[in-house]
Image (cartoon, rainbow, N blue to C red; front, side, top):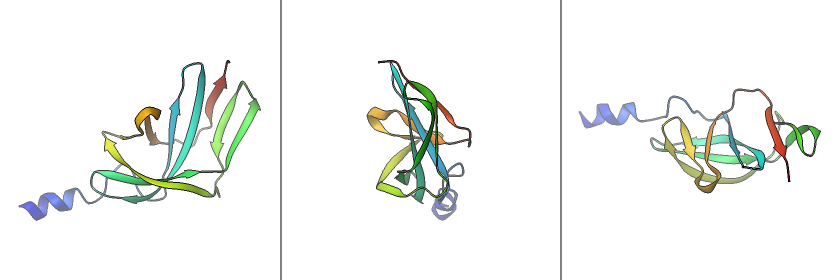
Length: 107
């Protein structure tokens, strides 16, 4: 029975290696950070920050999206919490739907 339960937990079904995740946070500013899934365990996901992001619009209002061939930055492991990764003070990262994210900075 234990083996049957362990097999069900092999890979989180909603996140797989190669997926792009996005974390959106801020109050007076809305900042988007993108990550690539590079590894999985039953309870956590290993991600690398995407370094090459395209911004459109101006500095205080626009959109952001990762470039398809983005270089990978710092790699780290985060715990799953439902359908998201708990990013600590930065909120949560979820699977990106492919649509550029509205960002702004009203400082």
